[in-house]
Image (tube, rainbow, N blue to C red):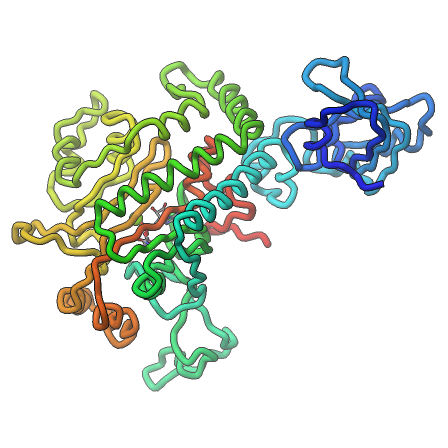
Length: 481
Ligand code: 4AD
Ligand code: MG
């Protein structure tokens, strides 16, 4: 007899059938009631053990974490909270779990403790829910772009290019670290490397993606990216997943339209397809909120917040307008933003971004037309800007509770302007000859953006630390296995 998933058992339309379920024991109460979870849903199925006719030895082995196979009849449950339960006729212990040693006890563990047990935390309700939502969201990403005819491109993980020009790269070498060959100047001679050149883990697939967009029209990437920035915050990972669409003939406005439509689609998809998990996560958050002082509690519950994003257009504001708003704002009595930003041209700090989104506009915001010198080299320079006040067609999307979730731009499609910019910033043209070829042969207006997948998962699950929405977080000082 093939076992049935708990999710299907709970959604069954008929009772009194002989069924087999396999899963892990969450709890075992009164020597009689097993709460069995198999990961197919947040919900456990209750299995009622006939303890009088079950050997004492077996009963002792039904412990939290143990894997079991239960056979029995699916009946309507008399207990509250569940529609069906299994009246067990036969039970097999598949794998014991020593109750004394199993770290995931049936109690609330701190998120810090769970992070230290990343391989086991997925056995908790919260992490099971988060990881299912993450999976559904990644399916939604593909579904959105595939429906629109975008081509999925796998850009390289090992690359010579520093796409962002920010120098935050993990170096890759095939040479033995204890015996790196040196050149005459005493520097590591990467020419002797397997790759024959200096390579690193990709920070973004954008530049390679652009070469494909200039042939296939609309493409997207969805893969791991790496940043060797030493940012120990709740929003940064050293390894994160990024979605990067790139579209030929799109300008900045088209890019904003695409990003907004895409984000709304994936959030709607999660709302429609993760109902139980999101309801559980919302309940968990509401519990947490109760322990906070009134003033710190969020105004909206999770589902309300997600629906709000679907129902409201993102507010589009230029950097210059944003600076004016910040300059005139007094976020609290003690501190004025004008002390923090006194000059046009400064980059926004996360507290500015959060003020704009959470206090001023109270909705997602798309900031565009940033000063040229705080953004990457490949962004399209705006025409007709004042000397000293040059702006680029950049856009960042800011989300409540998250800050920047998307960074993108229309690209500099003019060969001469791009070359001049690269020269000014000291970016090696020979290294990026292949990128410049897109501008030499059949260049065209094009635009794209990068969505940080974990930041999206953070928003949708209502979690607050990015380490809790990726299976095995890599952050400075943590990469256990
Ligand atoms: O703003 P970023 O650096 O933009 C790019 O990489 C562009 N090449 C994207 C493009 O236009 N194709 O990164 C894009 C997004 C950010 O908005 C943020 O959501 C996420 O990637 N991100 C990170 N997420 C987690 N940890 C980090 N260290 C991140 N750095 C960026
Ligand atoms: Mg950015």
